[in-house]
Amino acid sequence: MSEQLLVIIDPAARQTDGESVRIAKDVLSAGAAAKVCLPDGPEEFARALGRRGSRRPVVVGDGHALVRAVTLLHRMRELAGCALSVVPVGDTGLAESLGVPGGAVAAARAVLDGSERRLDLLVDESDGVVLSRLGIPPEPVLRVPAAEPVAVGSGRPWYRSLVRTLAPRPPRLSAVPAPGPSRLRVEVDGETVVDLGQPVEAVSVTPGTGGLAEVEVRPLSVGAEATPVRTSGRTVTVFGADFRYRADAAVTGPVRRRTWRVAEGAWGLVLPSA
Image (cartoon, rainbow, N blue to C red; front, top):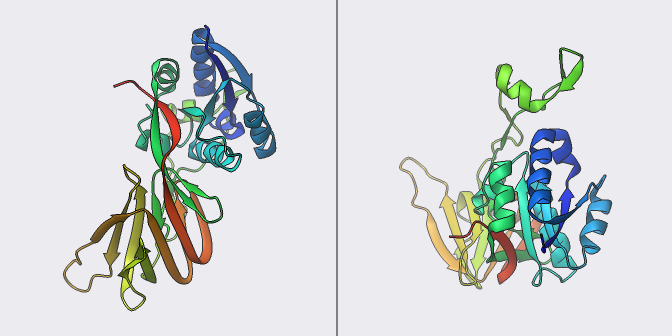
């Protein structure tokens, strides 16, 4: 019980899956001296993180909450000295892609028993960050509409967890329309990978290891499938006419130019010990 945690529970997580939030809070409180913070919005979230003192921050929430925490610590220039933990609730895709267990119990146990791993980060000129993957143009994302409260027995509302169990699955809806081909100029470490004359279906950039970003460009295929172009480098610059991109869980743009550089080992995430 010697370690002190600051457990910041994102408001969206409380609305999405209160049962998982309760489980995570119970496990963390039983294994460490945990101070629980329930911010009502982004400003209170930022204030709690900035006033954490010596407590290790634990974010309980989805990918948006994790990116928000990393972005705030980066802009406060406190990311290098902070080991961040996350218990994913809601959309768990980003956290799981980074190696965090998906279930509330397993993720909370990893917070208590895991070890810090330093990870590379993509940072753009406006101090935006990419933890896992950057996609140009934004790929369609399938989302399940939020469930309406269902009255059971005494009339109390039982939300998503019960609805997922008893009710038929609602149709999955695309959050972003399927994009068409783009004309982009992509430069890696100053060298042109593809120019505006070659339409492309997609560009993806992911933080790799050793301070390098992995870049894949898929040219527009006519007839036979075109071979993707793959390369790696420390800086990636994209030019184009008002293009949008998906960085982790959020869509940004339109912009006409953006440069990302790799910050090697810029942030620490507590993951299950090997």
